[in-house]
Length: 284
Image 1 (tube, rainbow, N blue to C red):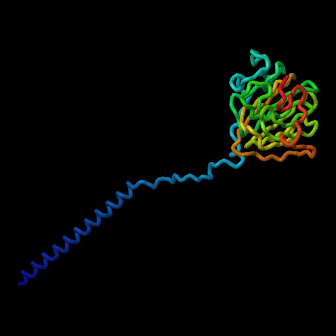
Image 2 (cartoon, rainbow, N blue to C red):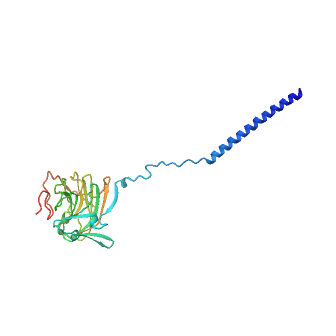
Image 3 (cartoon, rainbow, N blue to C red):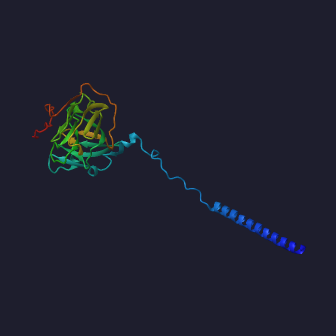
């Protein structure tokens, strides 16, 4: 009996020991598997979320595009020309030369005509300097110029006639208001003058030597070529820069109480500069 009981007890202890052994073995396997998984687990990928404000341009930068130097390349690359005298090459009237470190564009003034960009523009800022050697020297800038082979094509003109520099008026078949600039905005003969023309949505504003010359709106057409006039006088241009706009730039500039704005439809035509026909009057 005693031997029988002892034998049974031994078997029970064997079973208990086996269960404990298997349990420990299973636990070791689980722990080892967890450690292996932890060692091979890749770290989380860095966030690729981009802050939309991080690289967003400022309001001022958003209004601007790259500035173009209109005299950087050979004239034939950027410009075309029209001459009232058939067959005259561009180099006979318009020439670029380097004076010191700067390029200057010289217009001989004859034959009359204009130099115009190959590309059309609507919203832009045009800045440049000009210099004349005669008291009654005459030239001008045409904006929204249409592709018309005639001396005064459809356009809005910024007057550079020495006594009337800064006047704004329509030419050809253009529609728009007229402004007369305050007197004596241009500096004395032989001195460099600055001009700034801003166009946006058919609204034009002009500054001469840092002073407001005039502003008109509702111009039609409101896009076209930009042209420089050859009007009988030797004229020098330099620092001719253009920047296209995505929104208008507001500037604080001195105003003049003598500035006058008149509607073309309701008022008589302004007296044109010498040699410039009034709108609708054919050139002679």
